[in-house]
Image 1 (cartoon, rainbow, N blue to C red):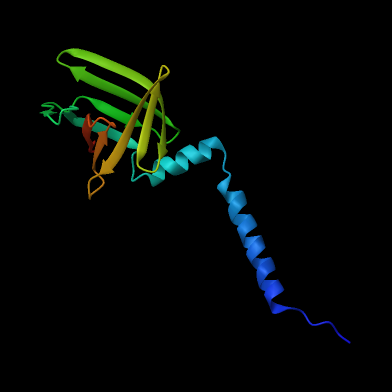
Image 2: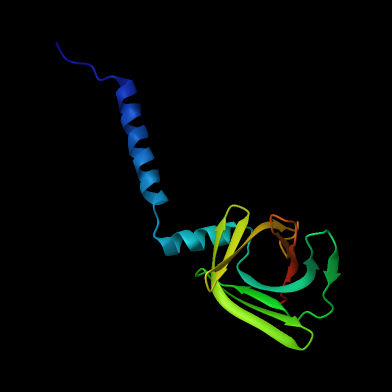
Length: 141
């Protein structure tokens, strides 16, 4: 008597193979993870100009010039240059993106923000847990 193949076992085998392929793809190198999350974050990669300071008490200050900038690179690094009057405060560091959370890390200091992008993707609000933060606009090319 010839043994019949169970059609469900073939489907199950295909499902296991597909799940294995998907899981292997989920374990990228750290560089690939940074690049994927940075690009999937709504476009944080690029040069941004600071437009407003958001204070913890809800007050805002509109920055009159567009000289202060945040340059976010696809390799997980960033540079920041903020002008306060005629004084420039700049630094470089690394960043990570997890969903809508942006973490800037420089000299061992971590700043954690929740990102909210404008509908056109050319503005972003970065807020701390206390409510302070920044509003930025994408630099024109």
